[in-house]
Image (cartoon, rainbow, N blue to C red):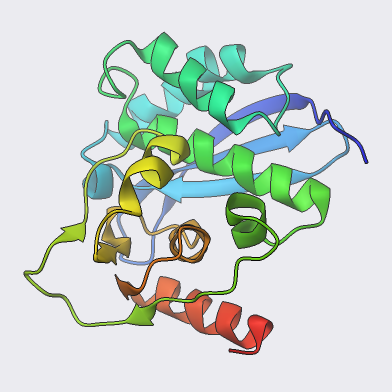
Length: 200
């Protein structure tokens, strides 16, 4: 099995999300032709204006990630924080998180794995119960990278998919074995699809 999938290009574009708000989409292209894309809005993660975030992706982030191995998510996320220097605040957490998400999506696709299996392991089987919003303790913070999200979110009784509109949040919830999740409609639909895929 190939162990190095080189990141050949990292580009961004401004798009409109499901709510009609302008947001940033990052596209990561690998040497085997695989492409991973991810959207993260500034509103969801307290990030930069989409135009500024896109500029940061196309310059500093693209320069840092090009040539790296997409399978090395931990190092990529570490590097994103190193070049930012302020936990995502300088480049924009929407820029760093979207880039981080896009790398993971491309890597999983290149390996022929579902995203939840790539993030949580082949034996990943648990899909969280979808619940209504609640004041109980739940994970809803601004995470600058996928690694920081996964490292922290699993310790909450209820996690929230509201900190990004990207469906990767459904896969993260399954990967960390979350028991309950407050989910936006598109994330809820993805959880239902995953449950059907797993025949749960």
